[in-house]
Length: 538
Ligand SMILES: Cc1cc2nc3c(=O)[nH]c(=O)nc-3n(C[C@H](O)[C@H](O)[C@H](O)COP(=O)(O)OP(=O)(O)OC[C@H]3O[C@@H](n4cnc5c(N)ncnc54)[C@H](O)[C@@H]3O)c2cc1C
View 1 (spheres, helix red, strand yellow):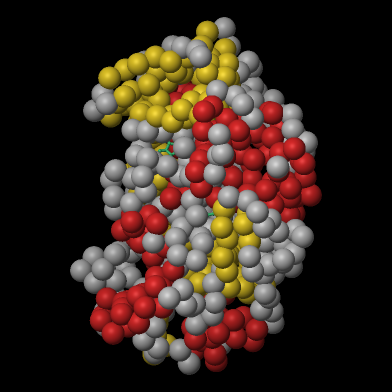
View 2 (tube, protein in one colour):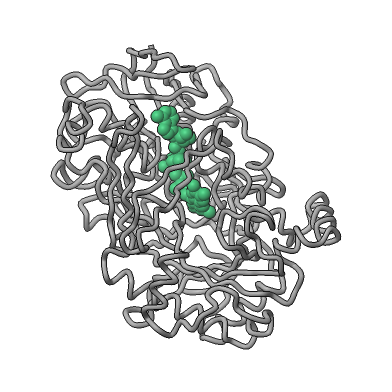
């Protein structure tokens, strides 16, 4: 008999299972992927390789996007201990206080930035910033990256445009240019499974790896069990008081629909009986869409140079071993970032701009053969932090299985197109500033004149890519007609079913989603256990 079943050992699931079991609740944590992280997951720069490991990632092919000229984007998500936090870019961004404060306009109470703060500090272990607003004793290491020559030039270009360099973000985020903070310690990634290794008394936690939760057994608005697939064999776990879904923004709506919970239109079309009608399941899918420019750099200090020069590789290897910074092996290739307003509308940050010390045809290139440019390359990327376009995730049948049909609907809201164009024009202007201009010999993507709006759209269609930040598909809200969960994560109309993962945010509260998800799980499990802040943090 378990007091709780948590499905998914990703960012939200690790927090939830660790806090529940630490409180003495007998907890079963079910995870589809493996227990151990590979070397490529641990080494920060290994993320490129990790994303090609089919054992450790879910690889989903989205429906084709009309506004991307029919292109179908590939989405990745982590599979195994730590979930997506074990294959992500490690960028640690809490988000914009104003966006958290906006949640209350959607009937979501208790989520103002001030109310979220204790849970951010509970999860962080920050050594570079002694500010009280930061956490210093949590399970997740956060490190700040040092500047290289390219970073200095990037900062200089922003400064020339009147945007200040600042020391640290994640306190009161404001317009500015910064060195990135990573969820990593001195040598290795700090993924959410850190939560599980830090439980002092493991007696209350049972973890099943390589086990897929297929669907929930629902009776009279209550979950009475879960059907698991262990090594190809179906097995029911019947005894659980409460069930917590932490499968991520794509697979949480999938398991709900497979269990008959959702919009009858999609459930019945898949040949499943409806157990509980909730029309918002799988709707309101939001993601960040990134566009980039690449450059041939003059300093041989980029990821590309690791492949071209054995000497550079050896020097970086030595820096890594001796803990010297900056060191590219200790990054995901991204080093600096800026929060920039959309000048035509307000002074509030709307764009996220980032500098990556690598250039390639695709974000997934891992060596010269697979598309990393054979010159010292860097890129500057930009995306809109609050896109308006919304898509959906619903189940579809393929080869006998019910898999998620992901329709991202990028750029279908016309304001997103004009905003992304302005963001792109901004990075063109940035690249023209003297300090940056002196670091490269030519721009390599796009090559053509991009002043023309049609050409710009063509460039977006062939090159824009996901930032892997899906949220919104089981959003919190006031009631059944417009949302899936209440502001405490409880699924509307269900007695013992909760959702704590990325799917609950109705919109992006941040440019990156991992810290917001870890924080949300901390906050929700705290609420569920009825602990005070002090009891919780001890
Ligand atoms: C490539 C990539 C790069 C990213 N970069 C960043 C970044 O730099 N910074 C940032 O803040 N965010 C980043 N993100 C996003 C961030 O990591 C995610 O938003 C966050 O980890 C989501 O947490 P989650 O708990 O909702 O889901 P996940 O962490 O994805 O966890 C879901 C877990 O559920 C398991 N699961 C799914 N289905 C089943 C099933 N049926 N049975 C059992 N288990 C199941 C999965 O295997 C997985 O372990 C990135 C994501 C990706 C994929």
